[in-house]
Image (tube, rainbow, N blue to C red):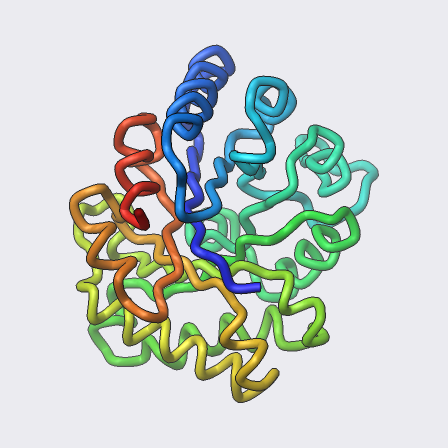
Length: 252
């Protein structure tokens, strides 16, 4: 079911104490508005259980920023999908560009992670997007299509329909550069077309596609007004309740 969604990705920020405080602030702020979108915060593993204890899950969804590509076992330092689910989290970010770039995540790895997320009733927020070189050399459509096809198109239509997609132009993450509204719309429409070719128009029309590249209160309303932009995956602006809520209320 296609929904408008604003999801925060805290990345490797906040201590446990700070994170619980931020979650409380967001939860309290949400209680004062009638949000016209689903709101999710994806927080460090160390925070999940504690944050879950202080938020109203009927108003605020909780997710992890990653999970392991194995069920369990001798994988020191890894956190499995079942561990994530045991904290009360119901979402997980997969395939973020930082995971692809710094930790070598591939389509094969991500297939495993998606399968394990589904096994544990976690909704993947699956990230796709091109780097600056690919944007400038004109291959960006091919790159994004390949990321979707290679990691996701083995799924049944039923399983694919459980995903949230997030398009993140990597050149616009944390750089202050933002894709224009029209660039975002162009890519989101292309992604929806790729899905329609494989699964049909109904599945494509029901897929939420978020924008994830330096989205902030000042540009969120214009981005979200585009017909194929269903919300945002928010990095830096999610680390303060006021700026995060400025994006949430862009749908109002």
